[in-house]
Each structure stands twice: as C-alpha cells, then as structure tokens.
Length: 210
Image 1 (spheres, helix red, strand yellow):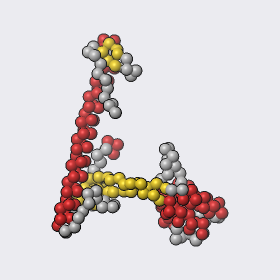
Image 2 (spheres, rainbow, N blue to C red):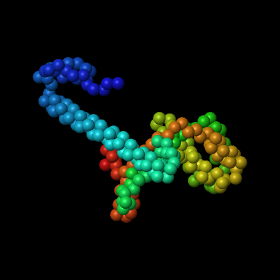
Image 3 (cartoon, one colour):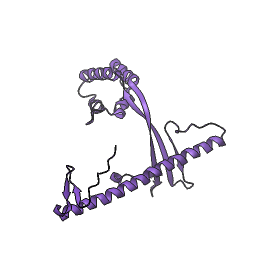
Image 4 (cartoon, rainbow, N blue to C red):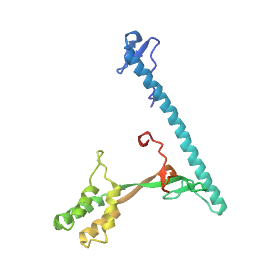
C-alpha cells in the first residue's frame, strides 16, 4: 500500500481532507509546521532504511559465522539459528551481539478447563492461607486491552505444581501444559555492552528507550 502523500500542483497545498488550497491563503505558521514535519519524517525514513539494512547485514554475518563453526567441527548448521538463540562476544568480553529465538505460544481449549479447576480451588481454599497465590492467579488470567492473555504469567503458575496437593490444582496444571501450542517463533537481535559494574546492558536502537 502506497502511503506517500499525493503531490499538489505548484502553488497549492493539500489539506487533511485532500482538498487543494492555494498556498497564498495558507497561514505562514501552518506552512512552517508542514515543512518541519516533512523534513523530519523524510529523515526518519532514511534512518529506518539504514537500520533495516544494518539488521539484515548483522543477521547475515552471524549466520555466516555459524556456518564457519559448522565447517570447523564438521557438522551441518541449518540457517535460522538454534532454539533459544546464541551470542558472539568481543575478545575482551565487553561487547556482545545476541540473537534470541523465542517461540510464539497460544493456548488450546484445555486452558478453559484449567481456569475452571483453578476457580474451584480458589473458592474452596481458606482466605488466609493462599492470598498470595490468589493474586498470582488473578494476574495470570487478566487480559490486556486487545483481549490477549499473558502466556508468561499463565505458565508461571506451573512453578507451584509440586507445592499444592489439591488434585484439582494438579489436573489444572496438566491442562495448562496440554493447552500450550507453539504457532511459530520470532528472532530478536540485541547489542550489548558491559558497564562499570560488569553487567551487560542492551544498546537501545528504538527511540522510546533512549
């Protein structure tokens, strides 16, 4: 889909309703803002193209090094990376390029059964003994603005599977495990540098993190 604005004939400007307006009738302030926005959006697109090229080149280099390692140890390495990812570090250990591969997870209908069993447990448990766990459960099944569940919070409930002997809870944890469906994976690229305390911190490349 083409998102580029339609060019107006010389001496005119397009307003927000796509109407041609003579430049002579447009306020100088509006013209300055228009030029300011166009200038910086053009620069943002240029930087975006640079980042896309940079990302592609880094991935290509990383996987090329993996192939070299595969040759060194006389094995075959499939392009795409290992499950969980891998990293490359500078000789002094101060810099690192890390590729992380994370599964995209959704839940099957078993999750509804798990939720019903958990609700039964919460209803029957004494109000004092399990308040902390009740908070975890409520948080786990809370949906975001788009109506999506937080998979990490739901899966974290299984950390308690051996601590609670209620058979309904045990069955609920099994239902959660059976509900997990891996629908694909996403690869993330991070650049990290060690700080004065020895911790590797990400070098942010998105404006919100700067």
